[in-house]
Length: 106
Image 1: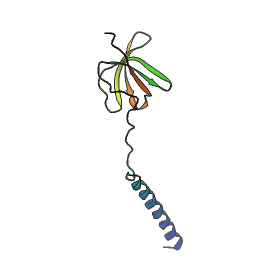
Image 2 (image 1 turned 90 degrees about the vertical axis):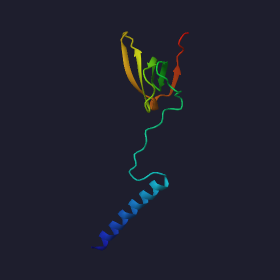
Image 3 (image 1 turned 30 degrees about the horizontal axis):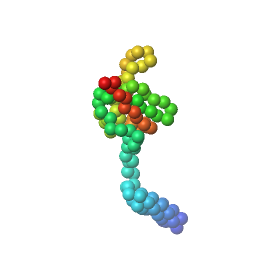
Image 4 (image 1 turned 135 degrees about the vertical axis):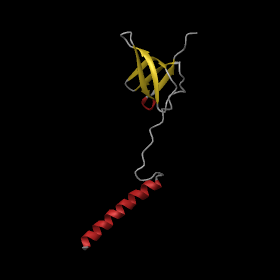
C-alpha cells in the first residue's frame, strides 16, 4: 500500500471518528433518527367532543370538533366547509401556532 493511500485512509478514519465523537458528545448516536417535534406549547390539552379553532402562520381551521384525543402530534377533527358539507381532517399539532377552545354556548 502506497504512502498516499495510507494517508487518505488515515484522514477518512479521523474524520469518521471526529463526527462520531461530536454526535456522542451532543448526546445522540451516529445515524440516530431525530424524534418528531413535540406539539407546540401553545396547544392546550385537547379532548374529544370539544370544539376548537386551530391557527397556523397563514390560516386557520375554524370551529372544528375533535373526534378523538390527540395521537402523538396529530388530532382527528371534523368541521363544516363553506359549501355546507362536513369534512374530516388530521391536524398536525406540531405545525399549529395556537389553539382556542370554543365555548359550548350553554
